[in-house]
Image (cartoon, rainbow, N blue to C red; front, side, top):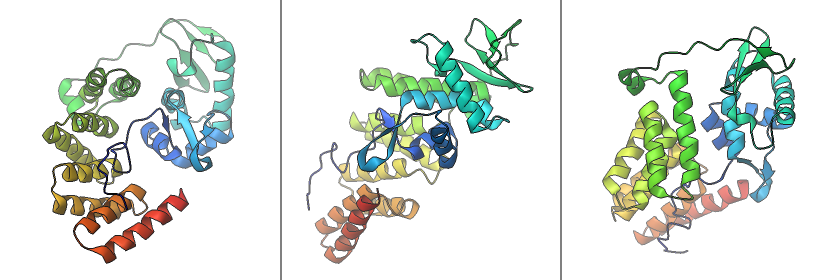
Length: 288
């Protein structure tokens, strides 16, 4: 069993990546995994098959679900929504993704807005007039509960940050901070910003951000995992042990959590416990 501390290996903090699993996509889009899978069955989302034949969704699918969220929350079923998305794909210029539109429901009409015009998607009829602009929420309100408009701005900043991570960590940090200005409870932004601070060696800041994420969502497995990694990076093995155990209470099948805990237990001379967690690690890998 390796004793490596290489953050690019099994002990790595979870990266934002270029694609998402069904579970990750559902969480970021605030939908159930079953609704995401239904959108795949209807042809609205087009993931590719990754390791062990699991679906992997690109960033555009995440943005598309966000654009269509008002419809999914309304009376538009997945089959009709898939037809609407396909119609838009066929009618829009190649360089303009469906995710660039704002989709909404007016009565039984599905309305698309691109900033210049509004039209009924199914009839193609251009609609006159513009939506009344809503007042931006106050800073105090954003700090408590973000409204729909603030959540949308926050999400777009978050999506931009994911893409910027490939180019500039500092630019990505700024975009994550922008997301948190608009939605202070955006757990994915807290976790990813914490990871960037962690990688830069700013451990206190990283711990604060991960901790904020867990306080908002005690089931946030990625933040719990990263807190355990952080404790190891500080050579605080008793704290790391406790945090890995907290993680496994929330996510009993977390493979890297079992692997890292087993390695840590070996270093502490607790070989029987380590063997048990190695068995759980192998079982979790087979289940993927």
